[in-house]
Image (cartoon, rainbow, N blue to C red; front, top):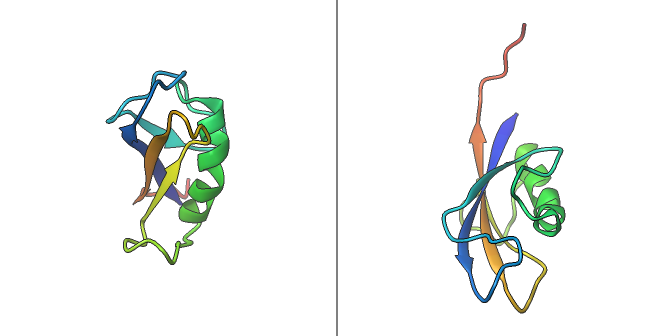
Amino acid sequence: MADIIARVVSQKGTCAAGHKAGDEFVIGQVTPHGLCAWAHYTLFPFAQVLQFGGVFPWEADPDRAMVACPDPGNPVVFELRRGYRVVSSE
């Protein structure tokens, strides 16, 4: 199974959650500490696709997706990146 890392690549205006470029979060089944819940709701479907091996045909890199938060007045753009981990069989 893949770990999905969400990294803020840009932020314009005033983010109510205080996100700024360079912030990183591991996306899983619960909202990561410090990540805006609205951003998590938006990122989660994309993260699930990447986590289970899917790709987005509009992305040049099959291990990545660019996703913007739903606040059009203060957009935060996240890069989701798939990374792999070894899962123990024990």
